[in-house]
Length: 353
Image (cartoon, rainbow, N blue to C red; front, side, top):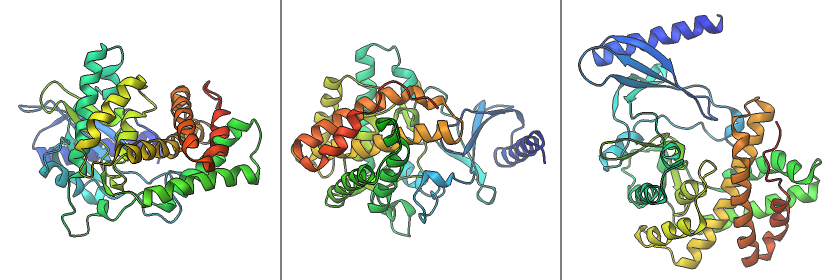
């Protein structure tokens, strides 16, 4: 079947599903921009009274490079979305769907992400929005396992995930730092540093984390609640700093350092485990190393293996975040000195694809 025929068949399926679930005619189907994942999204324009549109979220086979070998794919959106909604967290309402076809029909919360909202905004408005976003983290961490085998509470930020991040960084980012193929000793330095972070993580409290709570996964709308969380299905148990790393060391929004530190100082005592300031700061930097290392590598992978160059413009912010974390971490632990040297060698300019 040609791509155009496949598209036509998919749109016809979405029309039939929406009309069956919502009882309203679909007047238009608009594909929405996608991220690094292969999942697809469509805005369905609806006739008649009620909301003018809904979002169709369509599952797709995952890119195997997006997770460690042997790790199960991300679970479905339900029942996690319902659990978070029941806990009072801002998530899109579910309007229906077809689990067999891998389609969820969701409330349309608009196209204005947190990244869009703060770009060019006054500093006070940016700080207020990020304060709201940070305040979601303690609320997520207070969500308890309801039992019944919910996948999010069986998934952990653990050794295999850190090894996967180390392998990605060694494969894609090290050559950018070195200007040549990496050697075994250099790859070993990365593996040992990421294993150290894994050990620190294993000793930390574990709380529910969104796992990708960055500015493009928070939508800003006019009515309350102002922020709505998207891309929920990857949730897992992680150290209490992890979602804050995703949010405040974001590759898409670079916050002033004093502003970032103020958010961290305010939210730390609000976390259920209220980590002591030293442990909190150390783990924040260590998790930044592995999170941003993975992001840097994935941006290069997308450009070079998939021809998707959209993310190369976010390389400079990513490198600056890596350098800050590497310097501070190595100052506290000499075992991270070699990784810090390799990070310092990363070009800050966007690497070519």
